[in-house]
Length: 245
Image (cartoon, rainbow, N blue to C red; front, side, top):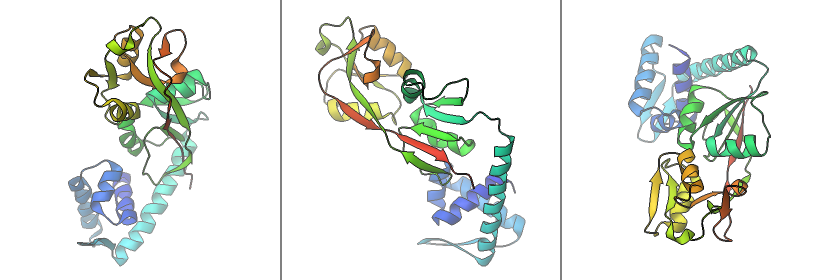
C-alpha cells in the first residue's frame, strides 16, 4: 500500500464511482480497480460494495477513508514544510506570456514556474502539487479551489507587413484543448484554407513571417503583429490555489 493507493481510494469514496475516479485522476478504470483490489487484499477486508448505481463504502471502507484522508493531509503538510520559500506556479504557455512576461505579475526569480500545454494540465496536477494553477481548462480536482475567472482579449492577428490578409490561411494550434483552436473552429470552421500547426511557438513564428493569420491575444499587438479586423473576443481562464488542510 502506498500514497498513490490512498489517493485513489479517497477519490473513489468521494465520487462514489470507479469511472469518475479514473477520469479525475487520469488513470484507466482497470488501473483504479486493480489498486482497489490490492488494498482490499492487503487489508483482508472489503472496502466498497459495487452496484449498478455506483459505489457504497462498507464500515471498513468508512474507517479506511478517515485513515486515508488524515494520512494524505499529513503528507501534504510535510511536503509543504519541505518546500523552499519560493511558491510554485503551473501555467499554460500562452498565459505565461501574458501574465508573467507581459504583465509581470510573477517573476522567475521569486516563483518556481512550470509551463505546460492546456491538454497536459489534468495529468500534471495529479503527479505534483502546485501553490497556484492558471490555465484555460476548468479543473475538477478536490485539492484546488477557484480564486477567480479573468478573461483574455483576443482577435485575428497578422504580421505588420501583411497587406492582403484574406489571401492567407488561418492557422490553429494542434493542441485540441487549446481554447484559441476551439474558438477559431467555431468562428471560421467553414473557412477552406485552415491549417493546423504543431505548437504555439510555430504558429506565432508563421504569423510573424506573414505565412498566415491566427486568433491570438491582443497583448501581442505591437512591433510584430496587428489586427486583421475590429472583431474582439474574450476567452475565460481560471486561476486556482491549492488547499492547505
